Length: 240
Image (cartoon, rainbow, N blue to C red; front, side):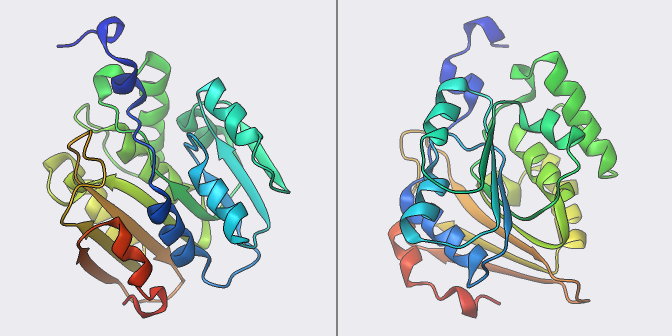
């Protein structure tokens, strides 16, 4: 096993920055004419989602950006947006202590294996799973905790939009997460790509778009496209 002191910074952060077309598409799907969302980005990294909000002029009520790395948080702080709060802390800790609830949670959470968690992160992640009525397994990656935590922080009606490893559709340790999402959300859209979005990481990803709307319906749609540039051709109002 690779010891944490010998692991690369990329392994420890588990971070691959989101291409602008993906951030733009997720926001276009999520906002879709709404102007009064309280928005959370739980791992804001270099701030590409916030930059897209600024550049595209998306309307919102408030933005809360959480980032554990000081230098990244400083970059996000420099993005000129009103009613924006940047918190320098671990998302799992924030999730367990906050009373805030959000209309929209967006982002590209880190892909970090359990072995790279420190003790406090292990405890906080376990607490998130317990609150959700799920069993935490040491096989679970950090992004699983982000999806569960984001779901806990949504208002009765709300959306999450995440860039996630394609293994969410396949691996055994994500089975209970798949069941959890199917019961928590009324609409789930999954967008996958034939070509790698992050070629340098050799990591296949999907876009997970989930919505709670208070209805009794439970619908899931999977859409496969060639690459991220094709996202601009999708009419988000026609997603099933």
